[in-house]
Length: 181
Image 1 (cartoon, one colour):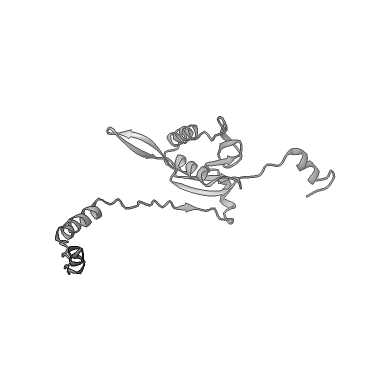
Image 2 (cartoon, one colour):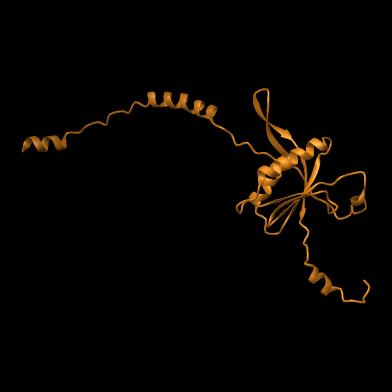
């Protein structure tokens, strides 16, 4: 019993911690982790929003205005004057981005100097749809020198609202017979 009491009263000194090896590890580990860190790459796309005061040059016969209309039924690629180049309906309820890319590639082959295009959207178009359409009209993947690169299509993109087409019956009701507007 005396031994137990003697052990309790014996004063022990705390052992010193040797942190030198841990500090050496941190000195080496921190620069290695910083060098291997991947920084976020952010891409910025410049957009040209159409202004309302250029209606006079909208009917210039020398230039062609390409536009892609995104609606609930799919895509309509048009010439900007009401002429439809290609209509791309949805496939199994999804937009047909692959065919849109092929149509854009064909248009670029026919008009290699053309740089601008307008993307016209319905009000309920999702952000992901907008980004996907912009990616498809701006560039396409191609192989050059055994390497996949992005081929340029129409990098100058303007955004706008898709035209709302009214049914013929509504148009006739809004303009009564015999009245001149």
